[in-house]
Length: 254
Image 1 (cartoon, rainbow, N blue to C red):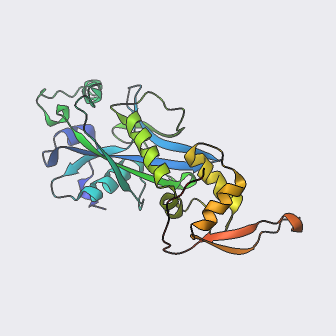
Image 2 (tube, rainbow, N blue to C red):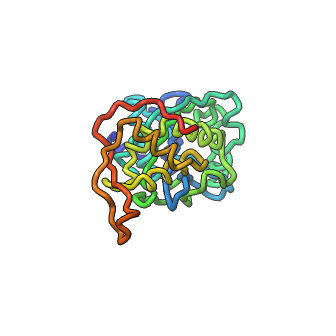
Image 3 (cartoon, rainbow, N blue to C red):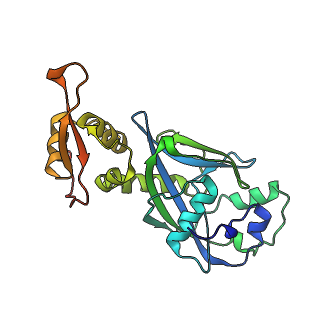
């Protein structure tokens, strides 16, 4: 992560900054798994009925990946998150809802219409799948609320951030095996049923138990361990763990 001295503590300080890369920003779509459902982490702008994914700008002397990690930390206090680039958003009209203008007006901050904050921005999207229970989030100078939402119950979104979430979810589903293995959402030892519940939450659909188990075992990413005894010996399921550095094959649960 880049040096903390670069963190901008208020909106006026951000607006006065002149060492950002022109016309490029980063946005982070953070998914979390909780009680068999998939959620996304959103921020609410001060005094506006608009929500956004955590995002920000890139310093001229900063690597792109470092900017994503720094921005995520500044906005949510999440650190050491495995972020992956998944899409670049460059539609001409993507910032037409004038969120920045409304935010500045609410703070009584006047800037010229030619200011860089009003110019067109292309945003590089990052996504991650994390443990819902491990997050520590906090309000900052730009947002008053930081909150998890079910992916199918999103609030009123700023800019094109609903599209970001939709495309991030598609990427997550396409790369589900890598994401699940790297997310630490399961204990070190888990049952096939626990693994299936996680996959179903991410994919948004039920899976047939026999097909799921057959497909997962065919990937050669799991090691079968001892049985998990809970009192009914004849029904005790096997425990599994992920192998280290396996070669993952393409998955298909049809």
